Image (cartoon, rainbow, N blue to C red):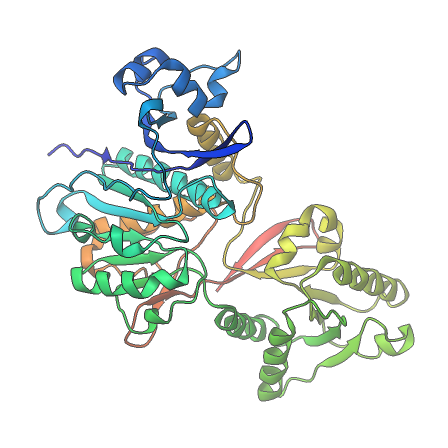
Length: 455
């Protein structure tokens, strides 16, 4: 049987524009994937809009060198006579889902995206980019023979998610969302009633994961992540001498990590040094071991004290070249990589993270090029890259559901998909849902390499 993919994309993107001094809102009613031999004129004609309306919704079309390319996506606005007020009108429901075989391994996978898909604020822009990554994953899966039926709803922060939980939504196999904690209880109950898997893609407060077996949470709460990072620290550096440096940073949130680490080191009977950035050089070096490799841990994620620590450690190593020193950092440090790469390598920095954006990877370059080709824009300069995150999440889950149906748990090794940026490794939370327990160390080696240490 020939497999096919039908994208029903109800992407309601609110675009603010100024008209005199009064702000109005408009909506995009659809997103069109360009076919061979289509033109701007033919697309506008097919959707009953003018060429000017189409170009206004896609400003890049107005550039002199613009070329409409097969496979790219074009935003379709409502005709000017049909502009609606998004503050008072309920977002339109997607077309009805097709009926068919009950086993998802023998039919298309029905996916619903319930995220803020708009351009009103940063949440909407980030989730729109994430959603584009989901679409790209569906396109790649189609090429490997996996059919997907995608529906999307603009579930903004002020929305009542209940209005989207209709009979059509009850036929879904997977819901990706929500972004906001307050929406989880109602969505969780709906998923339990209709046997739908829910992928919560970002870190929000979702205690329902501990009770509902159908919920999958990708990003762990900070406390859970800290506990796992501490365990991996002890595993990786058991034969080393930890040195914890107090940076006197009142804005830092990492005191909770160093407290957990000290507690765990005490339980293991591991002796560690404890000092500060203001300690004199003579006393500072006394906290380091000459017989073991030293692993330095700061109690801050912020760049300014981090750079002070680099200076103090480099000065110490000039006078004490026999010392071996590595550093253990935080995920936030990856934001500062470009300005601190030399010190990252020199001080053998290890950063715990649930993702890694490798700009030099051929796969990263390919997906960024494909994104630019499809959407005539570059991905936002953020960590993680939201489009790549969406691609990784969707590819992993949809392929898993295609392979295992309702028996898919997201456990390590089930899918065999090498992630571009976001590894997934789910474990069940008691009798409840699944939580991603993946954590890796991004290691900047003295030999100028960057490697990932996986557990």
